[in-house]
Length: 113
Length: 113
Image 1: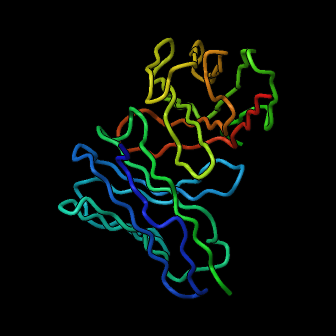
Image 2: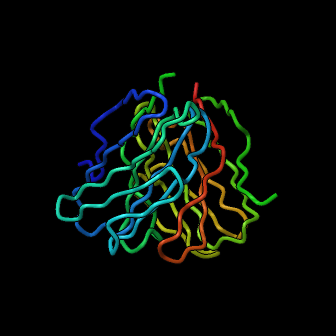
Image 3: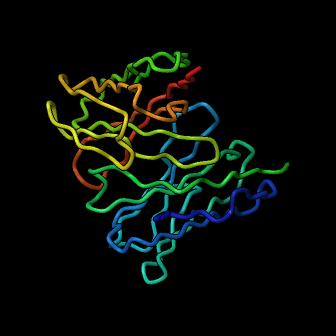
């Protein structure tokens, strides 16, 4: 039973446009959500996080939105750059993450020139 | 340079042999984690440790063992009881308190022949 779902295995976006990556979760106990970027055969790199007391968090070109009633979060990247091409993982945890993270299967973002 | 190191990058073993994967961090983090990634899948939690000499099973602990004798080190042993050991193994760490992102090492690709 997948508790964190990323339903789009891949997404293609033109350079300079907005990239929107989506994530749904089923566990209502999740209270901390993170996005990671990953290249093949490398470890994930942390991008941005949000706790359940917020509905938005921004860091430069990256914004994460959380809709608790819909159990949905999204990552917006504006403007998209060629270096953003990678696999993006959504992760979630209860209790603030100290007991480990539950990951989605990832979305492969491809930025077209 | 502070960070997490995993060695070796690639590891080959014969079926039926135990193998130990190394993870070291010099970030002074209290908590350490082991995940495994299979092709097209997200990361899944194997074991985690929030403090020296203590560790907890994650979602897929069967066939694995760990130790945490030092704060800096959290080695993972893949035993012969693990039915599908070929995977990409990732180690992570954080301060252990709530609402802190995990930092990942570069990973070890284990192939069992």
